[in-house]
Image 1 (tube, rainbow, N blue to C red):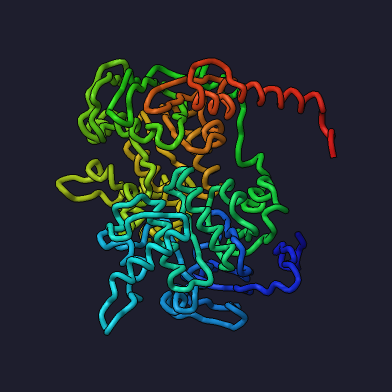
Image 2 (cartoon, rainbow, N blue to C red; image 1 turned 45 degrees about the horizontal axis):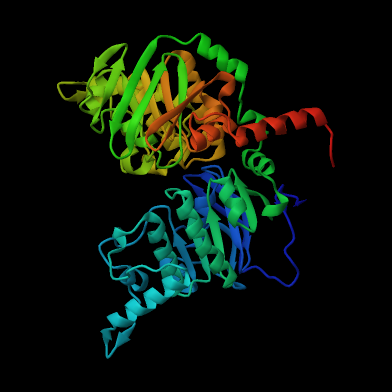
Length: 543
């Protein structure tokens, strides 16, 4: 990796391999505020290229300029060697650039075959040749290793298959470049690998793929090269093999990893020692088939991690605790007294708050302002005879914008204009405005960048120290261990382990997920041995 005069770091491309796409010195501002400042992106045919950065770094803006959704104020864009300036996304598609977003962009009630060739159906004697449509669609998907009934509605298939149908649509339109924007965020590991196999085939066929993801492991499993953006600028471009995870994270953040994740066993044990009374308790909670026997408790002034694989029943457990779904059996107590929560309103009235895992579908109201989104749940307490006390509302909004560090132009701007991390802070503020005693956080860092994750972790620790009882789930174990004082591990909808203090580390959690309470596994022993070996070798050992 080399440095240029602007601070941009780049590695040379192999000789004789000109880029398919070259974006140089791209600039754009919104309301006088620069969103991109001399940003760069260079992508070759036949490569999967990661585009990463914190939310608000400029990734989406770069993509929108490339695809004609935004008009750049400065800089040049070259595609296949010629300068281009797309005025609409349609022009970009016609030139061979196709985009697949996190949200499925298919017509769910139309067949898979119709979705693949929509608007480009083969015709015979002036009429659509439906047999040809279905045959070509089936053949295309089979080339991806996917055999499905292309006559069935696209919406009847899983998210992973719908993403592959979107890829097939791009290929059918002779796309030379495919942009995948957080396309794996809703997929499990098996579905991700299915999708990756298709992406690798696109690369092997000579197509370029721009891959946007917050999941670092995915980048290393799939991508050949990476471009890192920060604060509207390109700060690094490298072969993936030349940049390890630590370098990647510190480059994105512009600070050291030590400032991002703090994991102190002694501090965790001290927190447990000074925690308050038991606030929430669940015994043998069940709602088949996802929740079969979950028991847990949370005290005031502690953060408990709810750990388990995707599909283990984490979200369903959270929904039961909040009264969003009915329990088949089991007992729930708040402050030591039995309760029956029949609705979220019951839960809110008893001091519970629930931050859903799906920010876009169940969290924000995109057309409403930040102000209205933030005060949505507490609006009744701010109103008298149906009239909102605007002064009180403004006080609440100002207080939480300042205390949570929400970055925005104005409380009156639509929440959809905020980055994912700032949207999540607004949703957290929405629930904190109800003055809860128990905070249920389901994947609070899902779909946000590393810096925003660190901010959320810091906020959760502060809320715990303030005396709230926090139950938090997370797929990333390092995020869980960075925040929680202890962990409850569930597998197949059952509580299989509880880990406290020094026991609560990634190896022990993975051990419990894999083996339950059957005793120590080879995994834990191997990790412990590795730590001993490292200590014996001492600093500076090795190359």
